[in-house]
Image (cartoon, rainbow, N blue to C red; front, side, top):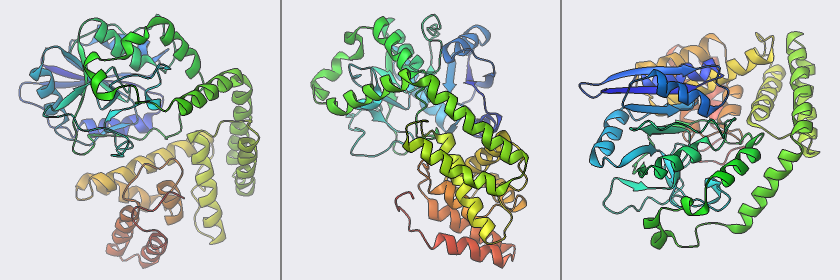
Length: 420
């Protein structure tokens, strides 16, 4: 049927809502419909995605993460053109590996394509001759578009890792091509927190290596182009050792992290600002002693703690002032972080005004926003531009105090600065 179906497994309604906002802005080709299929109780990514195959009659299914924002408004036109150019193409991804490394971890090898957070020209080959796409062995699961329904291997993968590599290989087993389009600028933002959650990663990697042969990791036409020098063997070996250690210590690491989360929840429920701030040292000591993995969630908490410390010293309203639980803190952070993307990618649109309004009505400080923009997990490029834009908003409102505060924080940074 002439229909596009967007499919997402989710556990975060804040991010999912923003993901859908971007979908609703897309231009739709004439004669086509768009629907969504959202799964909030998936046992695994593969299990959830198989429900969509049964439930939707859409010819084109777009499987995407809840934190994937499509900024190219002609996205549907572009993918339609690729599928119509070659009927043997059954899957499109935004980033992929022409040849998978022997360890099956595409991030250890060569990649093509772009995501907003992965565009370094020295790392990603865009020299794909006259074609508008290049064939790959596998694509990253942030977004995967299919024109043929092939069952996801939920009989093997019971988690949320390696389902994407597996599904790419399944399509190729059926004789179809998997491709990555050439993008002048990235079509999608994947604000995934940069730091991978490695819990459960190694068991699924071993399942993939057992099911698929190394010969399936290679697209034959890529051999002459990429040769044998497409992987840093030493780095790949070190990464596998790290995965094995995490898997061995997973129960211990998870238990310690859960203890810290409970402590944070307790301090927030008590509105104990000093106690909340003190948890920063506990987190960093646990990281230093290898008692926890320094996950993106912990980076976010440290960012909030830093901002609250600044705000407290100036006797300003703090980011945690209206927060009574860890889940509410995470929701507020995610909402703010996702709205900042609107300022970066759509600065002139009315749709972006919601970001300024949220910052204004919630009395978000320049310190909190700078901590998000310049954190270790930040993927924003126009950080100073975002701060300056917010400053201008307050200047237009004649709120000169907040204008001055944002300009003061902005002046500390130059565009393109390293993250702090």
